[in-house]
Length: 296
Image (tube, rainbow, N blue to C red; front, side, top):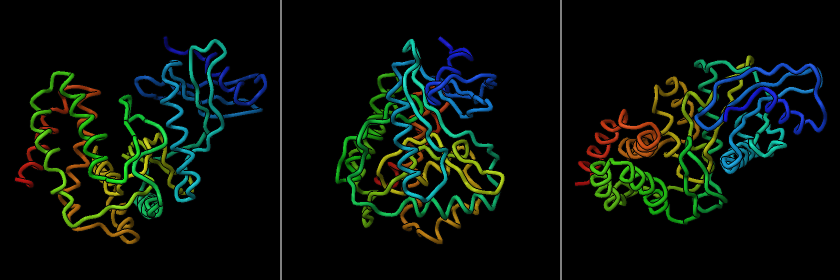
């Protein structure tokens, strides 16, 4: 059931703690499970995301990621204003600061690269997160582990390969399982350290304010290897070259990332395969074959 304008208004009123008069509700683009709108009144304004009530864990995970990134002080995010269930409990909602956003330019992309490198400072944490999350509308397991290769094997690639097999992409799963068995070889001589990562950072989840401040949103956050973040950053058009150059002035990349970048791209292509179907099958297969050839 798609939410009506009144559902967004009721969420805004729940967040504001009072009735709001003269509200202008403007729908925005959203994901397959989420509908979004801005709500503007003389007394309150914000950006509201609504999902069916049973997707409340998805919004809770998003909120925890936004707040963790904000608390790092490294990168601007929309401030979280509140979250909850609608009065009739049909919808869960997340209210955030309303920001006027613009596409990144070279200068703001450079600022984002530098700030992301600071976000990726080592932390004394295990890999994973305090709860399972979501990558798009797919679940993203986050059981904590002190071993990155095992974590990525079991809770990232392995999970997606099992999901692909269950959807009829058995050939991809078979070649992918060969990659899983030999995954440690891709990490020979490289020892990552946990850091906070956005987890789903592509150009659609980053923008700038009018003053050039970089902003990121819609995270799938967890503690992982910083290279996993950059692999996603290179997909779907990638960021301007100034982004990577600025990142590396703060946090240079290991030379062997030139191979592992394809591993991290693969996870997100598999996720798109299991979300959106065969359009991504050839690209995912090509990456698996490329990585297996590196190992053989």
